[in-house]
Length: 322
Ligand code: A3P
Image 1 (cartoon, rainbow, N blue to C red):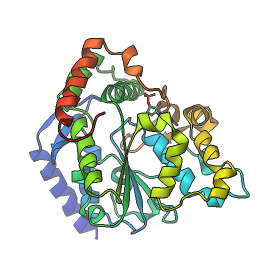
Image 2: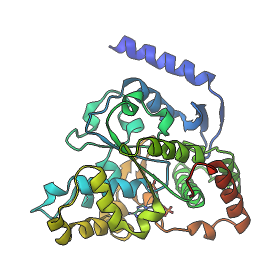
Image 3: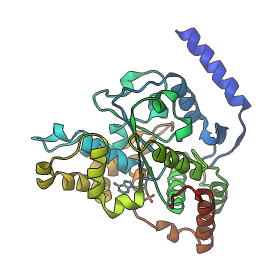
């Protein structure tokens, strides 16, 4: 009841007040909770899903660190999963709704035991929560998880642009790039340290390969069609040879490409209520360049080498090279 809710809020505020915090990129603090950094709003949602959330056994999770290809992966998995409903019709929800409005975010939208926030018929949920912090109900379930990550330098530049845009729309000056870079290299970023985020899912994918599919933005870019097939197979809805030959894989690949998605009216000129952000946000903010290696236009070679060096040291011995 509401008394219980009130209690929970008090507990939550008590917990928050004991957590170490540092100044974040967007003007608000980052809290250190179970080894990772979170904004207050995200943390509140996370604590709540850790306590209350229970997946359906058929749910599939799309996991990522921010700015590593979440929007793209949401679009692809959504298109793959709902394709049978499309046969006969040419319109997908993806043409009229931005991908974040097609697939809900666990920690932002499903934190308050509110099943009305999701369409149970579409068993897809996305999350930025690191593997070790996922609700136990997910870890112990048979639910599948698809993780995407990306070169750290590109992820950093993408995050800096994204947060700078958000700050501008809130009339706050962007954090200087060099300052943000310093923080990122010290593990201080939304859901950071980045390397620990990647390593958590990487190790889990080695341990439970049938449960966790580990992907990189770079390999998806290189051969998207092959990954569309791989995703479908992993999600338990492979393409039949007939459909494949009929061009269905290619159709989904094109529909979800950066060029096509970013030029849709809904993604160009509309806005949506972004998770964890109090003001509406332009959908176009989620489509910047969509390229590999754009970091080189924003970071000096020395900065690039420094972050490469950090990543190499952190990933050493894991078998992963990013
Ligand atoms: P850039 O800022 O490098 O352009 P996320 O979706 O996790 O927030 O990540 C955003 C990044 O993915 C941005 O990278 C964005 O441009 C890119 N992106 C968005 N849609 C994409 C698509 N359909 N294909 C490839 N990249 C895409």
